[in-house]
Image 1 (cartoon, rainbow, N blue to C red):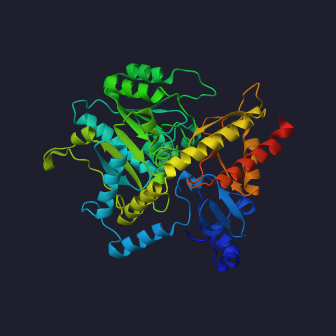
Image 2 (cartoon, protein in one colour; image 1 turned 90 degrees about the horizontal axis):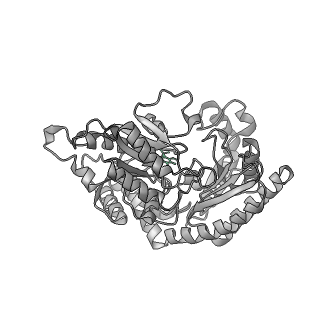
Image 3 (cartoon, rainbow, N blue to C red; image 1 turned 45 degrees about the vertical axis):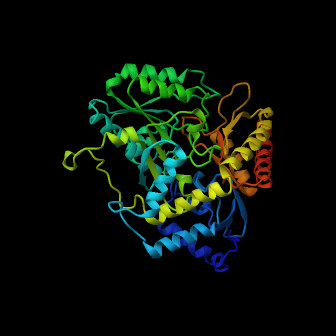
Length: 456
Ligand SMILES: Cc1ncc(COP(=O)(O)O)c(C=O)c1O
């Protein structure tokens, strides 16, 4: 692994870079007015689970970038693979074929354990867009052209493009961009802390009320990630599968976050023993070293697209970079690293220990629930343990800011459900070592106890 030593010149350049940034760069999710006073931190290098900023401060990245750098930073072999591939064949559309894409597709179906076809995209949003189009076209070509609706869930996140955003159940993300695409509707998702509804029964009721002949697919994250790390009861996913089957509705599982070891398993749905009709993957597929994502269709779904060339039954969807040789070569090697280093098992073990330790925080009056699976953990903060009202956004932000000041980056929900900016999120690289997990936990514990103690 790369040592993480930084080029000295980067420190000197930092003031110039701030000027360039302020003049020309538009950051995601950021109010730019007043940005001078709270410039995003400049990171110059990274190694293992640590980032290093322009002032030489090391920060433990408790959220693996955007929950994607599963193998950790500084993997020289991924850089080597990318270099070799760029020299040999830097680009090829998948109207041709090349070894990295075919090998990675075969690797993925092998990991999934069922026959299917892999369609590569550049982002999780695009993978979901592809899944929605496949779902609608599948029904159109199997005798149910009236099935077009996509049922999704409140608090779920499926991406930023207009279709994926239409499936996203987080009101604030849609403000100003509406109207959304027609045909998307939402139901409640299980929430172990706040919602005792039978959410699988709710899905069946919704399908019946909408008219099963109009519903194309149900999309869900096996564990809602950005919406607050919501772990459903064990019987939820198997029941969802049965309900979808009973009503001819395709099940799309969005494993963009939960895939590739994040929950301590290759894919979160394998634990439930169900198979999706369509599966979307991203993030950990190339550990963020390249932009890569994928949609996997079960063979039976794919077969509905077979026909004569002029019948227009094939999937008429193309993107310039989907299945990029460099991205897929890196993705393939990234999976080799997971296997060689047993990183899924490691994530399960580290995650169990971290969860057990952090559950000790539940005796704090501002900690409502600590939950999660593998290295995807959520700490739900409350105004008081009696009211269970969500802790206000500013106090939650203070916990996150204190962690950052103490050298540990943790995430939190934004206003995904109105009033619920109160869930601290951890999703570190899967390589997190025991002492690093202890540092992450102790920093968060100190932050919660010291930042919130006066207000308990
Ligand atoms: C569950 C889920 N699906 C889809 C996406 C969209 O992926 P991308 O940002 O690569 O478009 C995300 C991104 O965070 C996600 O969390």
